[in-house]
Amino acid sequence: QQQVKQSPQSLIVQKGGISIINCAYENTAFDYFPWYQQFPGKGPALLIAIRPDVSEKKEGRFTISFNKSAKQFSLHIMDSQPGDSATYFCAASISGYALNFGKGTSLLVTP
Amino acid sequence: GAGVSQSPSNKVTEKGKDVELRCDPISGHTALYWYRQSLGQGLEFLIYFQGNSAPDKSGLPSDRFSAERTGGSVSTLTIQRTQQEDSAVYLCASSLKIGTGNEKLFFGSGTQLSVL
Image: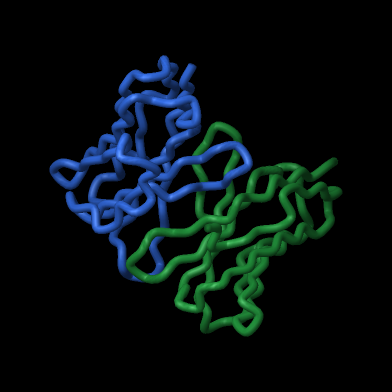
C-alpha cells in the first residue's frame, strides 16, 4: 500500500519555467515531509524538508507548500534550469520510523 | 569515509543463487536503512537498524531476505535463492539518529542487482 502518492510521473518544463510536483498522504500521524533529488547512477539526496506546523518553506529556488487540511504538499522549482533535470521523490514519516517515499517524478528541463 | 559506501556496485547472479550486499555507513551514524528501487516503483522500504537492532523488519518482501548489522557499523543484506523479481537497485542510507523527526538520510549509490 502506497502511503504517499506522487504526481505527475514525468514532467517537461522549459528553462526558466516553474516545475510543480504534488504529493498526497493519508496518515495524519506523519510529521516530517522531505523532498529528495536523484541523479542517474546516484543515490537520492535531501533537497528540502518541512514540518506540519508551517505552510511554506523556501530555500533558494525550491519551495515546499504544505496543506495540512488537504493532506497534500508540493514542491515548486522556480526558474527551472537544465541542471535540475533529475528524479524527485517526496516522502513522509512519523518521528522514529523510516521514510515512506512516493514513486518519483522524472523532471526534464529543456534549454 | 566521506559518504555511504556500498559494494558491489553491480552484481549479476543466476536465479537460485544467494547474494550478499554490503553497506558501510557514515562514521558515527547510528541509524541505517535499506531500500529497494525498482523501475517505476519508487523507493521501497526494506528494513532499518538503530545500532545493531532492527525494530522494524516489516518491509522485507519474504523470508529469503535478511539483514544484519555488526558493531553498529557495517550492514549486510542477504538474499537467498534469488528470483528474477529481485532484480533492482538496492540502496543503503544512514542518518545520525532516528527519532528526532528530522532525520536527514545520506544514501549510497546503490547496488544494481540483476538476476538472470
